[in-house]
Length: 181
Image 1 (tube, helix red, strand yellow):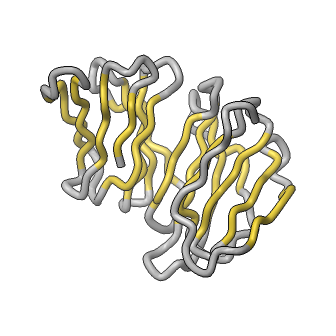
Image 2 (cartoon, one colour):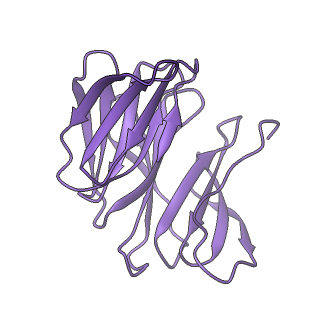
């Protein structure tokens, strides 16, 4: 997984070497390496203001890092399987993460408070691994992709399922929301 910083000056990469690396996007020079996960890093995402990074890992955690000081700010624990995807809310106040095992079992989708690290909501409905999550631009909804072949749209405030999109015959690996909502 690779993610651009919001200002386009840096790239962050997640790797099976258990690290996150931050690169200068203009020169290609390695700026820093974040170490702390004990298993593969599956996803990385910048906070909207570029001050933090969140990383999702096979070690069943999400870690929040200060992108300048390299400091580990928080470790979010609660997933019982590898965390496959993580995303910041557009206002930077929350994170969402999805997990499940390599066979597509034990799906979990959580919404977290990005400041305290407390789990706010657990969204239930997928029958297999959650692979990707994305917030709507207005922060009111969350879309999730899953190994169950569906995309689900959730009310991000209540956790209620709004819509299930069916039609794929295999894992849905990624989901994106249009910028106009």
